[in-house]
Length: 109
Image (cartoon, rainbow, N blue to C red; front, side, top):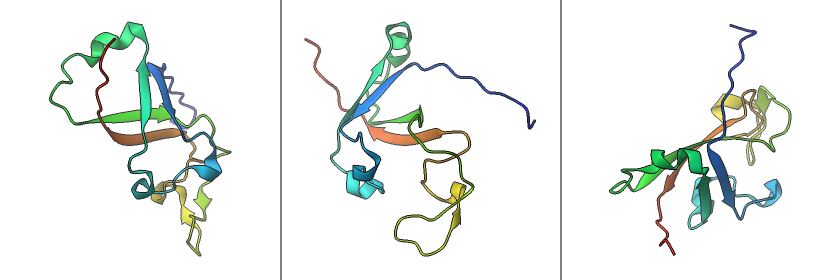
């Protein structure tokens, strides 16, 4: 399994006002009220059918700006190094992120 490769294809783009790592909230409580937008590419739009009635959505994304992978990191405001999988650090070997976001519907023009 060590030499296995997993390939995935993007189905859209995520945009937010957080574009610089040093100005991005480190914990979700500091990001409350932050708005972003998920754009689904047209060929995948049908997959959005039947989301009415849902309040939240899981977003799985590629951490394309993360630095090199590290297995031990020193979290912000922590005195000791921790295993990267016990933290929210983006410098993971697989660069996959996960967020639960609230759905806000935009009126179509």
